[in-house]
Image 1: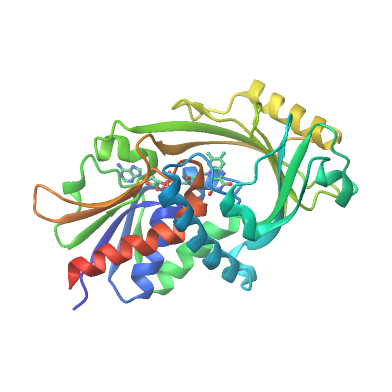
Image 2 (image 1 turned 90 degrees about the vertical axis):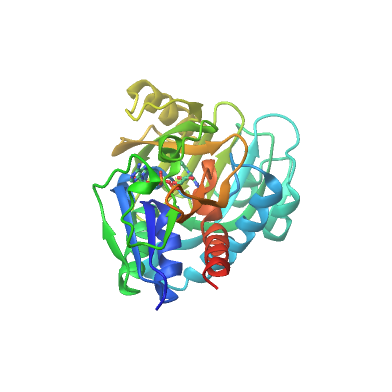
Length: 324
Ligand SMILES: Cc1cc2nc3c(=O)[nH]c(=O)nc-3n(C[C@H](O)[C@H](O)[C@H](O)COP(=O)(O)OP(=O)(O)OC[C@H]3O[C@@H](n4cnc5c(N)ncnc54)[C@H](O)[C@@H]3O)c2cc1C
């Protein structure tokens, strides 16, 4: 009989692990305080792009493995995953194209590629490059993962908040910890730092058919989705989950200025805490006081979607080696 698996967390990390275990025949149950769109994952844009996560030597292979899976999912319209052109810009100086990006580069120059390739004129930037990457519409994708998990036989229980890992029902042979920033208390991990992000959801912007990102201060991005557009953003160390109206105003003003459009109305504001871990993503097993094994999978910072399938696959590998 296959070993039973309890997964803590129903954000992108927990759901992706859940899908892998359930579809490979393991009895799996997800326990979470909050599910899907009510998690940090629900506040994300989300683009495939390694950002605000460490260490590069591990991040890039996980990201590349995830790229493959996500681009495969684009053939299923129900997944909410599509391919998009992402234009990464610099306000001053020449942008550096990271080595990992080279297979996906469409164009690069120092005279604002957006100006040459779309009707949107962007004068705010000095240089940039364009890559083709998966765009994950979180309003669809998280439900899609839940659906796949349940069709694979997985069960879910929400409104459960564990004080410690040993509280998970002893009937489960293995625990996977995908608690995001919640792992700070659950795994007593002082290395976790909440990198707060606020976004404004606005109506679709006419002629904006690529994602525009600039990491220079102030962080700015505009991500067109099926029904709306995500304007961002912020990244500061804070636990505050309340949206700040002044921040929303500043985000909308900067995005509108860069895109040279009228300030759009704001449908919704979202805040999420990127689970950044100073010593890097934690993906390893540990023995609990009751002798059960927990596999930690948290600390993905600003790259939870970008790393999700690569990390889940390593979690599965560790579990499978232990079960043999
Ligand atoms: C504004 C913003 C934009 C972003 N954009 C992108 C992007 O474009 N691309 C990208 O790849 N990433 C992006 N990210 C980062 C990404 O959202 C996170 O890395 C990702 O959501 C982390 O997922 P997770 O499943 O590990 O954690 P979470 O989504 O936080 O889920 C944690 C889960 O654990 C549960 N939990 C926590 N503690 C407990 C407990 N004690 N007991 C029971 N359950 C518990 C929670 O209820 C929840 O279900 C963005 C983040 C923000 C905030």
